[in-house]
Amino acid sequence: MKKNIILGSLMLTLLVGVSPVSADGGMNPIQATPTPAVEVVTTSTFDMLLNQIISEVLQIFTWTNDDGAISFTDSNYSVQYDCNTMSGTYEIDRSAVDFSTPAATKMACEHDAMDADQQLAEDLVAITQLTFKDGMLVMTGGDTELTFAASLVAEEDESTADETDTTDYVGMTVDEAQAAAEANGVAFRVGTIDGEAQAVTADYVIGRITAEIEDDVVVAYTVEN
Image (cartoon, rainbow, N blue to C red):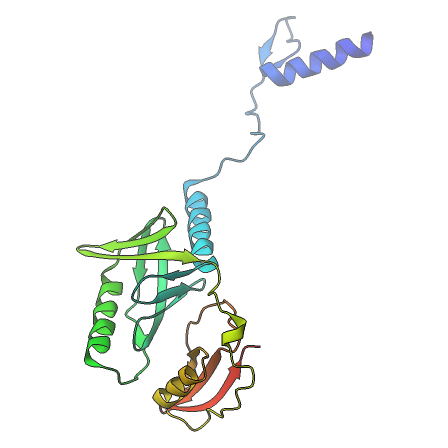
């Protein structure tokens, strides 16, 4: 019984923040400020966590629309429409986003496709905000709006990938290699240009070729299998 009284007194002291007995027999407030039981998350920490979550969501998916696709790493983006692959860096501050001016491969395509690439480059630089809505990535800035749908992995029918493809792409120009890959029913992308790594998607596509380019010529490549 005595132990219960002592424990109860100690708990009451902790709960109400007073010392049990003062010099005159009364109850005096404890002068020391109690230490919070839970650390409060600061605004800057919250923003950092939010930015990390947004970046992770961007990286999990490949984002596609009728014109092409865009993908993200933790600090880089890569986007391709009908012609060239463009890549650069991006920064997130909550819903605000800033895309660097993209670098692009130098394939010659039809005028409409090249015009679309030019417009895409201008649109990306104009983007200032991003949101997720109904499974869509919506990026806006001024009069510009780009909308992409999420897909976890590019769907590929294994039967359409020619596993017996013996084509040697080394020595071909980018255009020639891309045309040969298309004829063989496999996907083609550029991994490095003149020693500079390009931002590529983290998905897996059987038979896809990732090429190393120097002076617009394939010098090496890998095949996903």
